[in-house]
Image (tube, rainbow, N blue to C red; front, side, top):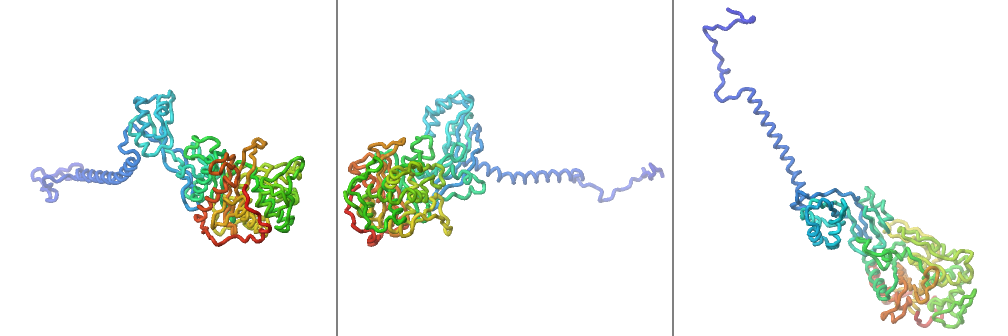
Length: 583
């Protein structure tokens, strides 16, 4: 036996037969080939799984693409949004006043235009209603590297512009602020700037809250009621236009909570396009303008006289038989009775002479203390930043003449909101509540400070009702709603001087007067007189009728039903009841 490397050599003469299991049948793969085939199969399976997982993702992306830019040309480019979203603003019933939506800014790189600028401008102008062909061409033909063609473009408009196929046009997604009610409550809500920052009014005052990441899903709920707001704006705008006035303001205020249910200033503006309005339209006359509000102040003087004990009886009389001369100034009455008058007569006939005598008896110090409690020496503590300080004489110039004239509404200027909050305290039992634009939380305590005694407030309610039933405010009456109020017609002050022939006409009202719930203040700046007011420019003929129409409209909305057989008990103030008078 031959050994090869230590092993027996196989016999050459008789080969050893192979076991049957070792014989390979025809077509059977070798072990290496089989492993290769299995690996390939696994790779194919993994690839199929990956494709299966990718299909839903691709479909979702394609659907999103189609939703915004169906059949989008390859040349179009869209840039992500840079402006942060903001929380919605809603009224007390959940109606949207401001919300954020996705819009687009259309920009161009003029130097890279592939198409004809003139033809492209014509096509884009046919898509954008608020841009002229000339304005668009000016941007396209600019020599600048980058220009905006339009902002706040809707997705549907952006798609049509995108379909034009111009590679030099860019579409930039932006979070845009929308005011769906247009001019409604524009001075209260305000607007944002191009960067999404609150510029004025509530948008500015609550800017941090509206942008807060944790609060964006929680709307800012206001005390405003859009139904009341619409009615107030309609009535006030009608008078403003009819009288060709310089301006107007109106407020509806809850006397028990201080909630501002409606507030407007005329002229107004569209917060969706604030740049298209002038400065006068954006000026909030309800909180930012001060006026001498005339005889509406007489209610505070009478109340301070009752509260201080100067007036002990409604039958108490004061000499109004002739004009009153004090410090060289002559105080006279427009509706002179030329005799001694009772307190109700002084109030309903709007006697300057009688009111001046009551103010003098009350005295400067008590008068100032009362006005301070009403907040008439400072800005109203209120959410809006657009507020003005009242104007009044310094203490060293507040003598008897100032005491008398301020007593009947001359020599001191306040905003309409000051007046509304003051009248609420006058009729609600004597408690001043800070006015607010935010809806009160049910069950939350409402804080206030006492200004008048409850008994004083009760007498004032009767006197205010008497003015409307028999006095200068008769045209403000709304049958069934027991309206009480006071007219005020004062000369307009410009740059510290009275403008002869220019008036500020105001009506301050409350209803229902036997259990007051709301105060209404409506003011018109420099009415010119019209056929509707028979040429008169006084409050009793211009703004009082609008107050009546307004209350008739809003009372049912506010849950107050008319009661034709119910009225205020006037027996306590009916001593020598005056004859009906005109203002």
